Length: 264
Image (cartoon, rainbow, N blue to C red; front, side, top):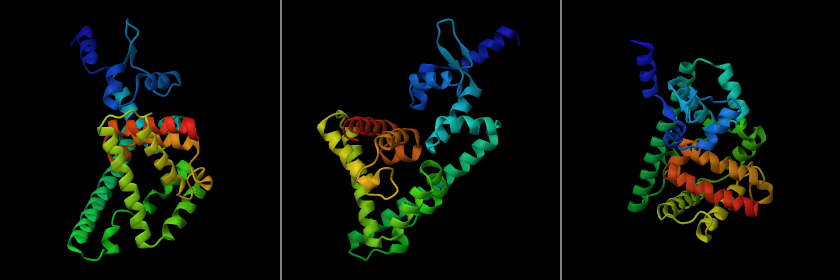
């Protein structure tokens, strides 16, 4: 195979910055920022000035998005990538976590289906099955790394202090809010409009009711936390799925940002 053939084959597997942004649900601006800070360099820059990314760059970006989804800040992500240069074991670790998360969500779905069935039959709700898959302690390390040990401790004490009925009521509020977000996104309303902003206000109130949420002592989250959380809804597959997919999550993020800029 000639050098020209090698170059042609490599180019066929490259993605332009616009293609990569579209595939990953991020933006060209974000990818350029990653280049500027040395987090993700393009494999080459074409004569047209466009950035192009090869297979190695795609793997690195996948790791960046996974780590960002866990709430790590960009300097911490850079340190993690520098510390573990071999992508295979790092991705194996992420795969194990994602598979465990998939199993947890499957258990949650089964428990919700069981609750619906019991309600329709007029039967009592069994706490042993109603909360299968809702064990929050499995996220202890993640929460502590993201927001600190005090945030986890306060939230944990609050959750454990509630009765089964109170937990069920809180989860119902959460689900109702999520459903309203998905409905609004599906109708394509303006994130800055009154309806979307009312949802963002509900989101802020709901978050502010949870001890350990940054700013919760004032009954509402901090501006930085609220905006950052919106970004995480898009970056983290778990949250994106909760809001109906990446496009719906982006709508939630945009509405939250508008609300935070004016009210937090």
